[in-house]
Image (cartoon, rainbow, N blue to C red; front, side, top):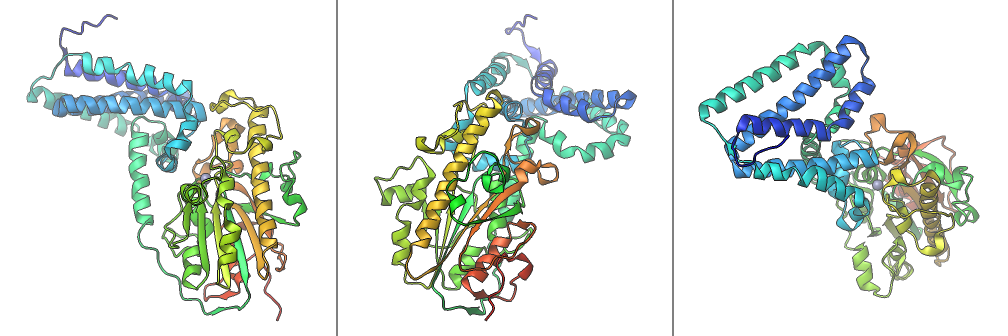
Amino acid sequence: MAINLHKKASLTAYSLVLSLYTACAFHLPFFRYLTGHLEGGFNGVLLTLSAAFLLVAIDFFVYYLLVFLGRFVGKCVVAFTLFGDAVMLFFVNTYNVLITDEMMGNAINTQYSEAAGFFGWGFVLYVLLLGILPMVYVFGRKVDYGSWKGFGACIGVALALIAAVIFGNMKNWPWIDRNSTELGALIAPWSYIVNSIRYEQARHRAEQEEILLPDVTGVSDTRDVCVLIIGESARRDHFSLYGYPKETNPYTAQDSVTALVADASATYTRAGVKAILEAQETGELYEILPNYLLRAGVDVSWRTSNWGEPPVKTEKYYRKGDLKARFPEADDRYDGILWEGLREDIAASTADKVFVVIHTYTNHGPSYFSNYPPEFEVFTPINPSVEMGKVSREELFNAYDNSVVYTDWLIHQTIELVRSLPGRRGCVLFVSDHGESLGENNLYMHGVPMAMAPREQIEIPFVVWAPDMELKSPEKVGQHHVFHSVLRFFGIDTPFFDEEMCIFAPKNE
Ligand SMILES: [Zn+2]
């Protein structure tokens, strides 16, 4: 079809071309989901056709409205959404993710340095061909905007048709409602726009001032140190401590650690970390463990190469960059830098009780192979491509498993460090924020909503080293167990301590 760019197109035709393009170029996964989950027969066909019509009609309505009212600005907004649609399609197709509010939270919280790992040549192609190229039409096509009268008529007809199709499908509403998360997550551009707004609203609610917990009623007089290592995307079934046949825990295997079976509360970092730090599951933000301990007189510090935790109040809060500034000769490419100067910091503390949180990044994808030093490349071959769907299962597993070996070494180093500190009882905990998909059911990474998340994203390692404590043998624990267990380790009494949520047996005095 040859388009004469010099002859003006009516705004109706212009909007229709763009809405047809949007429906065809970006909605293959949407229709694949629809046809894959519908029962066949006449109703299935009707619903699919209705969905196709609605996609075109609603985009037409919005494009027409934007360009009529905004003119050039409206065109810019349309162009921006086409760019966003191409990015979204790349992620949906490459990583098989759903663009939910949780996933937008992941995207918003991903820093550029880490995000760079996602963008290979495939990404450039998607954006160039599907996002940038159509802008030639968006900006190049001369448009006859028409009159206000034409505007009213066109918008009226579009709205009436949309309403008719929606009400004509009333008996499908329950099905649509049940599948709304998935369907909404695959419709461009609404998925990423609406879900970004929903995510920001939820975050705003969560970042309100934390609700203080009742004061501590008693503290033991022992001198203790507890290091809590928060893992990132560590999945349980790739830890040999839990029976994985490859030797991914060669270091802690010699440390007499206990590996508890645990499930995460969420599949994304912000919520997983919050669950590790909070006493119980609530929609609110209650005082988190480090802040509560700080208020009880504990020496609290935080070291992180990650992000997403609720506000931590200690002054001893060190990002990777802060540690690099303190220790310029340290290698800041890997999580090892988070341990730099830790022994000296603990030794210098005059407090009876010292609590250190180390929030790691090591098992985060897609570039698992770039998160560990070369000497930890024990499983080969690996494939340094970021497009996980194109890497063989063996290569992907090897890179991930190497990152688990490095994590294991970091845990082991912590235990060695704590063990060798004179005059302090020690405890080291390693708990992951969530698991990780490595191609099972064609899923990668994490962030699938809990209700439909695969077990790989939920099952996490919960590794304990505490030679002075007697461990109970719970069948399964959760992330909130950390809170109550750390309180018991420190010998801190509070009115809301929950025996059920504590992995340590009470001390018999
Ligand atoms: Zn995470």
